[in-house]
Every structure is written in C-alpha cells, then in structure tokens.
Length: 212
Image (tube, rainbow, N blue to C red; front, top):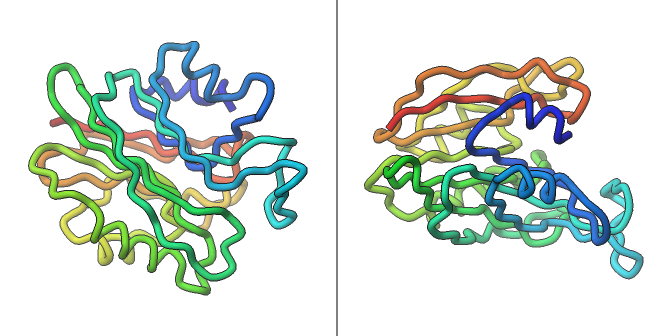
C-alpha cells in the first residue's frame, strides 16, 4: 500500500480504509516517517475480545479513516455520522482539518460512509454530514469513499461540485464511481484522474490537483 502512495506523490491523502495494527509498523507510521502529519479515526477495532467476523482483518488492530498532509494541520474536528442498520463497523466520524497551504487556509473533510446501500446508510450519513458541516467562507473540499454515485452525492450536498469523474469500484473491473473529491466555489479544479491501480485496494485511487 505505501508503495502506491509514494507513486501518487500528493500533498494531502484521504485513506478511508487504513489498517492500524496494535503492534508493529503500519502505513500510518510510514507516512509519518515520510514527513506527513496524520490524523486517524478508527471505525472498526479488531481484537480477541471484540472481533467482528463480518469484517476481514490481518490481525489485531483497527480499520481507520486517515488524513495525511504534508501541509501543516492547524486544527482537527470530528463530525459524527449516525449509526445505520446492519453496519458492522463501530461509530464513524468524518475528519475535518484546517490546513495551512503555503499561507492560505484551506478546510478539508475526509470521510468514509457505510456500504450498506440497500438500507440507505450513505443517504442517512451524508444527509447528517450536510447538517453538521460548518459554513466555509474560504476554500474547502470533501474527499473519500462516499459509497454512493455522484449525482446523488451532489443532490445530498448542495453547493459542492464533483471534480474527477471515472469508475473507481471494484478496482479489478470498475463499473461505478463511489469515491469522490468535491470542492466549494472558492477552489478550482485544475486536473485529475482515476489512477489505474487494482493491486493494492478494491477501490481505484483518485488524484486531483486544485487551486485556491
């Protein structure tokens, strides 16, 4: 996983499904060693006392949402997402970070909604996120695994515009885009792509260049 992150060579990473082991080195540790500031929010802890057979894991640790930034993180705030039916994960939050990008303050929110689409989970959680998002007067973007198609995402989050459009899931033969980067009117989409990588995740990564 770290190898593909190195090749992406981006200043800000949103990693919706990051394994953080209880012991030993993980991707988060390697990112910090590479100079990134990293914020983590576990959404499923796997150990002998509280294992979840519905969620595969490589050992004891936590599946987590992570935000990694080469830019200085000035502040972090967690935006709780409601629990939904039949979601085996624990409580989820979106991570809001205030970034110093070469002297410009940029707000970003990384998120990972539940995949229980047929029970309406992404609709419920994105609707709750819309209500909990602060009013951003400056440049801001949202990024992550929305587990929902783009037109519905834009309908649930008015005022936010999708950037890259391309199929991201499943990575070996993608038929849908459920991973998105959205910007407000203070940010300009310069370029972007869905990266042709299917070996490191069941989702293809998105790479975006933005300008304030």
